Image (cartoon, rainbow, N blue to C red; front, side, top):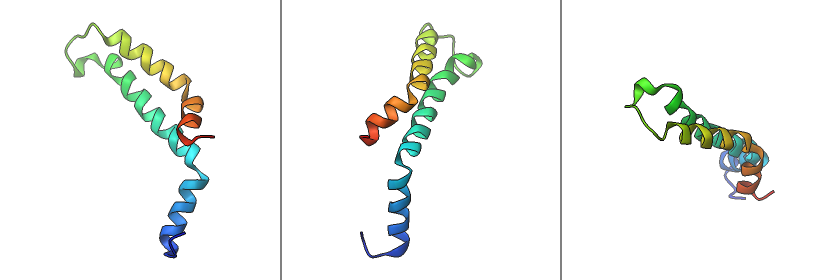
Length: 73
């Protein structure tokens, strides 16, 4: 480790919970993809709204798999 107690604690926390942190990040991306078609008044009418909805749904369903791939476990 680095020898700096607070930095060591932060690095230990990230190492302990890296799968959960990756899952939260993936969930945020998936929700972002779903918001566009759910609130179309925020954007002009889009033909690709269905594509965003499908991709967002797939990403949310695959959260554990994608997070495991990111952290390598």
